[in-house]
Figure 1: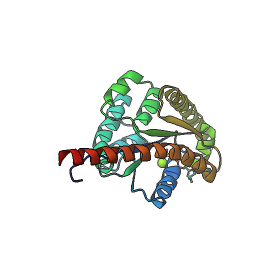
Figure 2 (figure 1 turned 90 degrees about the horizontal axis):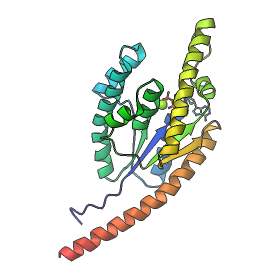
Figure 3 (figure 1 turned 135 degrees about the horizontal axis):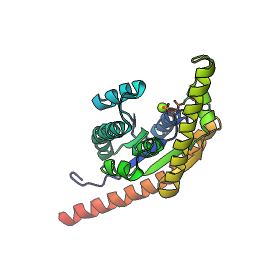
Figure 4 (figure 1 turned 30 degrees about the horizontal axis):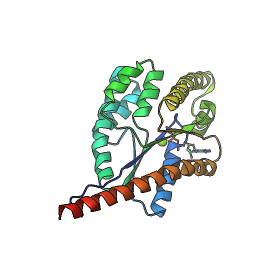
Length: 229
Ligand SMILES: Nc1ncnc2c1ncn2[C@@H]1O[C@H](COP(=O)(O)OP(=O)(O)OP(=O)(O)O)[C@@H](O)[C@H]1O
Ligand SMILES: [Mg+2]
């Protein structure tokens, strides 16, 4: 069936605040999908590409204005999407750690207008499923801050500021979850295994629909092919 285009695509995005377990869960999910015979492209944002590298450097030195940062995230995503689309067209399942929903949640929590953020990201197609890992910022911060890395009052204050910001990001994510049908809120304060079980349950439901669509697509392509002979 050469030239027949029956590719059914599946783009899965992990979202959540820093330290919610996105990387951990994405990796485990990719392994599970591969064991079940799927080809998987596992990726993340910001990317390791030219713009992603500028962005990471900027994030660590806080040298960009929030608006500039938002534009750089979108620019990095534009490059990322070329790669993502290639893999999707080749029939792979794409699993990405963060996608444009991160821009909406973080950048709106940083004070930018949600509608502007949506408009500069409007080139990015919706994910088929967004797995939002929901954790209390205190739990997430405990996972990622090594004790003794910062001391005394400074550490307390920075921790507090970071926590306040992540509270706002969490609120923004929960608001997005109410708005977007493709969001699945997964409570993520349990063990890695417990969270992975919940993630797989959500993904299995989507996979069943994916398989059905793929079958119908193949059937249609076959019919088109036969009709053309
Ligand atoms: N359910 C869990 N329980 C306890 N620790 C966890 C759990 N999930 C992840 N961790 C640990 O927490 C840390 C952060 O996890 P991970 O890097 O997966 O989070 P992330 O959401 O990708 O973070 P970031 O936004 O910084 O990329 C890691 O050290 C990881 O091993
Ligand atoms: Mg990560």
